[in-house]
Length: 325
Ligand SMILES: Cc1ncc(COP(=O)(O)O)c(C=O)c1O
Image 1 (cartoon, helix red, strand yellow):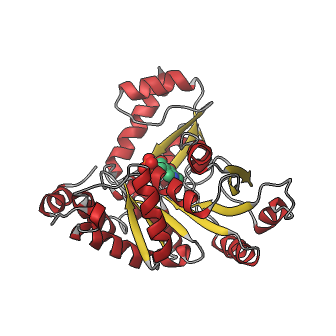
Image 2 (tube, protein in one colour):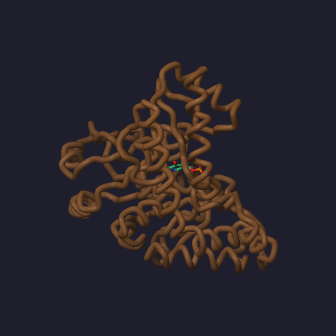
């Protein structure tokens, strides 16, 4: 949720019409985002989904193949947009949100009219479905080298890139360097009410602007949202460390209750398993515990700037009482 200070920044924002590129606050946000990502330019989007899908749109032609991780957001949680809008097919690789340069190599096809051309490699960092996992940086370098050699383009779904930055100590610009397009959410853990940015070259940004308009994402006095995003980038990145510590404590507490937790959380997402999952989830909801609806026996808990250390302890107490029912 936006904090009081963020709301104040939003209320004070100097505004213009961003469809004409005349909103000074939005322009400042885009300049700052480009600087953080080490890119020539950045463009604001109303959502991470639109940011990802517009990026795929400008990097591909209909019928192309995008290589991506198993259970990636662009395939699983964006309502079929890659097929419906860009007209591309996503082929998944690897396990646990990661894949290797060898797997990319194995998925390439000869220039034969039978095959759909592989055009893009997309990486999700951190990986939502893999429980907030940070992509191995060295492997990313190997994939990027291979992609360059083979003329492939690269997209980073960095909805939670800042979590990866804080967890790894590797700066955002270093993570972003090999990619043609990098989407980052200002909402989620960074606490802005709305918004994502895509960092890219200046030329790609102009193509992205056209696709954004076509998708209905050109907004007028968007500087109010830009002010929230700027505030998030200035004040809410370093504190992600606290969310990561809270996730680690939550995971340890869940294990202490005898529950299975998937891996050790690297960032702010905890994937855990509960028997009689649906009944547990309903009981948890009644007790004010917001965990994502189950998939199989699996539940997702996320820590963020509205969750304190004592909230984590209280959550564990409530989870224990749901298990006893
Ligand atoms: C990895 C990832 N990418 C993209 C998105 C999409 O963001 P939005 O919900 O703003 O469309 C999400 C949302 O949860 C996400 O987890």
